Length: 114
Image 1 (cartoon, rainbow, N blue to C red):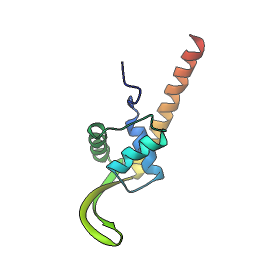
Image 2: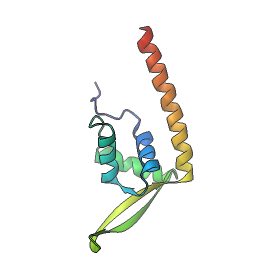
Image 3: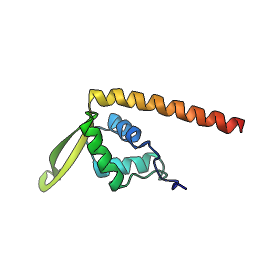
Image 4: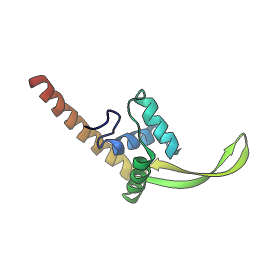
């Protein structure tokens, strides 16, 4: 039985949607956004998120860039990899949202008729 907090194939959709609303986030911020926006119901673990980010980058849906983190105007020397959506990612997001709507609509039909 899948855990209730598992993303069940919706991780790409969630990441693309978050990056469409909040560009230039690093991985931990994406994980936090998924958790926060879902009211602590969904969690993206590092072992799932980072391979997904790499795959989406290779597909051309997102672009990544290393930055040096600055806190209170001072260079911390710590680097972070930030991600943003590409035009191809915008198209993929629309396709993923459409697919998700079709799936949830079908599940709702089954729930109403069974």
